[in-house]
Length: 131
Image (tube, rainbow, N blue to C red; front, top):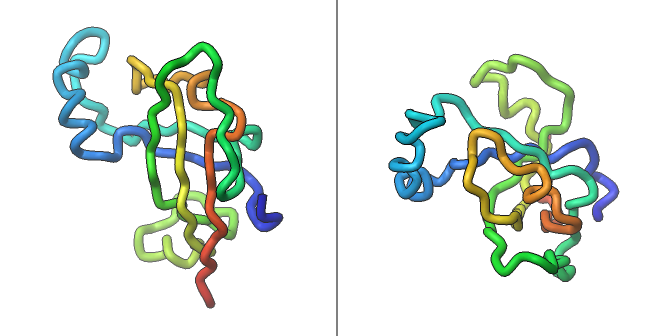
């Protein structure tokens, strides 16, 4: 893994409008009764980080993995309650993230075990922005 990458990877579930639309009926049923009104976040801890072109460890008792291809935004400075106008001042660069997880039934509480498979988050070499 690139030594530059450290800290944590925070992912946003259900950020694909087609996926959300396909699950709309599920969310209208108990216990949910409505679509999420705030982002649904989950973490990819260090054990999940993987280098480009490395094999992903397939869980032995699962037949299916869900893949999410995402743009990773690398935040280079500590920040809290940043305004929309200031947000890009904290971006250090971008990378591609392929997130492999077990399929899940509950998106309001993402399955930690299903999201934290060893080497399941392949992160590309970052493209750093210049000041």
